[in-house]
Image (cartoon, rainbow, N blue to C red):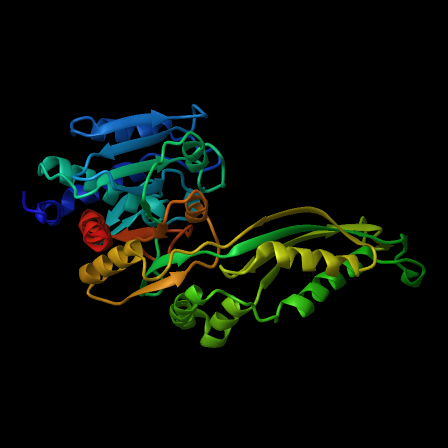
Length: 415
């Protein structure tokens, strides 16, 4: 069977991909509440005529997941992962129907680019192999998951916990394009989330000198963290150097080269929330803040956290009452998976595709931590989570072309 037949099938059925995307957009899956039963039932009906194995897996009945297997010529398994839920929307703020509307080359709707458009491309990849009778060179596993947008446990974590994602590599269909530039994300950053508690002495607002202002102490502690760590040059592994070079070049177009370089060269420290005080005319006795610190992959998060604890201990009246942290992960830039996805995307787009780090972290981190080499890739638009979110027809078709060709490129790079 000609290996190009699935790609030819995709190219000849542009309108079918559009219709499928509109069908997915028409089912509301805003999270919260994140109920995905209707869209999973829709996917099951779509897949029923195809000669593939389909299984519903749910730990929360309202948030089921769908696992689809397409047997290949080898046991080497490539996983495609995508989430079914979306962020909420305010319909009154939209100029188009947030549950799907086409206007020329654009398909509008919540999740159009994040990520029901890429989901449609994955579903069409399954159809293209099945309907052309083509056996992929590697076994394909598709995980359509719930609960991603709120970081819940009913989706990908549940499948990993149940051992249902036995794969050798993974492509997540998160949109990885920005300002007309294309990329594959091959790394993420580590994080330290701190809750800082400040104690002071209450006094009347007209005589603040008689008290100790807990909010002042709290803000002072955050400034101390910024001064001590915010400009520190991070020591990163050698494998990160080419990724950081491409990351800086990629982000420079939107934030400037100096800011892009600083984003990865040093920890980023964001004061996310702060609360305290009872009235404008009183000196606050207590206050609390949440601080988000991000670290480039390759940095020892635990060592940095230990230093941060020592720093906070030096700040009078400040204690850490809660902390969570993660370590940044990376897929080497010259790995077979990165090469397969990036080179395939470049051939489809006929443009450069950057190999970059994400600025945050998500399901890719979970999968890499579980031992599954993972990248994120999808053509899309800059309208993720925005009013009038949309994706173009060309992006939909190009995503499907990349997804049907990546298995062959990966098999060739492994041989």
